[in-house]
Image (tube, helix red, strand yellow):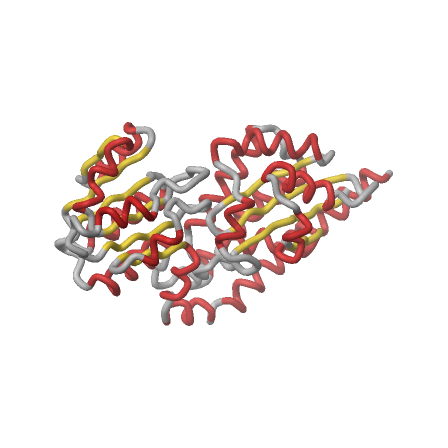
Length: 345
């Protein structure tokens, strides 16, 4: 019985490569089931976020299942997997355990100690559990990861000076546009990121915020909580000409905003600056849009450049965090070894 994780993340590949490996949240249940059957795995779980795609798996050690998982990724995404082998990483047993604990605690994130990733890991676990692709090992492993992440947050200062993808995005907008109070904002896509963004924007004094989503009810629910305005997804293009800031984070498999349509709006806007944050993976906005004068387009990787001295404070806590993770990992490894011995008897 082997425990492993195979993945690609912001440390090993830029967003233009990561997006090739991403999975839509709507298809995760299907992907988990297909992967388990295709790669002959005993247990598996797929974690797909803007910064990483990782597959956690438990398999019999009768053969090396890494190749089977890689082949599945290649077929599913229509990729020649050999072109990306140097971007993928594989961890086994103790290294895999420690890696998950670091991921869940935000220690492997673009912004160290960020809190969004724990919710994403919990959601991925729930999806896999409901798909019935987890079992005794992954269930215990992920529960341990959640408990360890909680322990880090309560016993260290790793989350001191809250920094998240959302706060970094708003800080970047302020840096480019100056005061934001009079700006008009369009948020495309709901969910946790959209909710946090509206909260930060409201603190900046922005009053004109429109929210849209393919499911109008979701946009209405989010807008109602923050006194924003919800608009139907098919109408959002009509708002672009009067919008100063676009923040988009949909799960669309292709671009929803093209360079040509932004270019055609600039004369009507009298070349007024357009600020666009694309948090989606795959990306929502055509990358060449950034070549238009007075258009400032930033993707998820660009946000790393705005991380400031807050991260230095968090790095000072890393030794304490790694001690906690090391102790938790040792306990789980002892349990895993006993399970392996039991299965071999």
